[in-house]
Length: 191
Length: 190
Length: 192
Image (tube, rainbow over all chains, first blue to last red; front, side, top):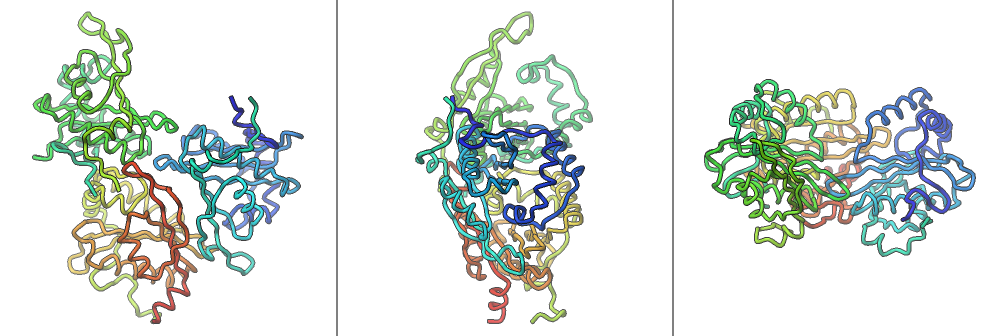
C-alpha cells in the first residue's frame, strides 16, 4: 500500500502548535510570501495569537470538511510550509491552498511535489470528484507548477485584486477525478 | 423542476422542535411504537425534555444530518419523523431512521412513500451513493416496506434484542444509488 | 445621475427593506420547502426549515452584518403592500481589493418572470458601485439557471470562469459559471 504522506521531496505531517506558531511568525515577515499566497492585506500577528488560533483548531477536533498538513523535506526534515484542504462535502469538491514559507525552497519542485501528494490524498482517500484552487495572476511560478500537476485553467475573475496601485486578475483552476486518473502520476510511492 | 420533498401520500417538511417534542411525547405513550423503533428500554419523556435535545440537534444544520417532519399531503397532518445521518463521506453512505407515530397510518403505504421521497433526496440532492438502515426482526411490516422501496438485506446482528423473554436479531439493509436508479421510480435528470 | 437625491432603496414595483422578524420567518420558511427555489438560489442542499429556525438565522445574519462588516443584506418587498418577495445581498466583501459577491432571489414561483429580479439587481448594483464604491462584483450561478444567466448577461456581466462539474444534483454534475462586472462597465452602461 502507498504511503499517502510521503512524496519524492517532502512529507506531510502536523507540527505541534508551538513550533508551528513560531514558524508562521517568521514567515509572515516575508510580505512577498504573503502576497503570493493571500489576497487579504498583510498582517503581523503575535505568536500568542497564532498559537491560540492553532490550539482552537486542535480543540474543535476532526471536522470532515477540513484537512491541514505541515510539510517537511525528506532530505533534511526541515519544516518548510503547509497545505490545507477544504471540502464541499455535498458536491464532493476540495479547495486547496499551500505555501512554502522557506524561500530557499522555491522554484525547486517542492511545491509541485506537495500538490501531487495532495491530489493523491484528495482523490484516493477523500474520494472527491474534483479539486479546485485560485491563484494570483502575478504568481506564474505557481501556475506552471499546478499545470504540471494536471490542473486546467478555467478562467479569471478580472481585476479583483489590487496591490501596489495595480489591478490584477485571480486565476481559477480545477482538476477532475477522471483527469487525474488518466495522468501518468509521478508521485513518490513506498510500496 | 420536480418538488423533491413531495411523494404521493406524504411530504417532507421542516422539523420544528416545538411541534415535534409534543408529538414525540404523545407517540411515545404507545409502547408498541417504542419497541418497534428503539433499542433501549421503553421510557416516557416530557415534551420539555424532548425539546432541549431536539433544539440542539436540529439547530446544528450540518451537511451530515437532516431531520424532517412527515406530513400527509391531503390534510397536512404531522404523522411521523425522519432522520438521515451521513456515516462516511468518502463512501457517501448515510443511515436513515423513520417512525410513523400516528398508528392509523400504518400498513397503508405511507412508510414506503416516505422512503421513496427520502431516497430521492439522498441520491439527487445530497449525492450519496448508498443508504443504510437497521430494522428489528419482529417488525415485518417495516421490513416489507423497505424491501418495496428497493432496500436489500445485507446481514443481521444476532440476538441483540431482548424482549418478552425472547432474543431477536437486528437486520441491516442497504440500497446503492445505481440500484435505486434502476428501479421504476421517476428520477428527474437534466 | 449620481446625486444624493436618488433613492437607493426604492424601485419601480419593489423596494429594499430590513428583516421583519415577526412576519418574514413564516414566509421564508415556505420558500425553503420549495426545492426549485433553493436549487436556483443555493449550491447548499435544499432542506425545509421551520419559521423558528429562520428566525435564528436572521439573528445570526444581523450579528454578522454588524460584526464582520463585509456583508449587506436586503429583503425585497412589494412597494404596493410591503409583501416579502425575495432577498438580495452583497457578501464576502474584500475592502482592500474592492470586490464583493452578489446574490439575489425571488422566493415564490408566481413572483418570478415578472421583472422584479431585474429591478432588484439594478438597485443592488447601484448600492455596490455608487454607495459601497466597489471596483467589481461577482455572481456565481449553476449552468441550469438559465433565468439568472440571461439576467446577468443583460445587465452587462461577463462570464469569466467555468468551474467544470463543480455541482452535483439529480445524479449528474453541472458547471458553475462565475460572472463579473467592473464598476467602469456598470457606469458606461448607466450612461448609455
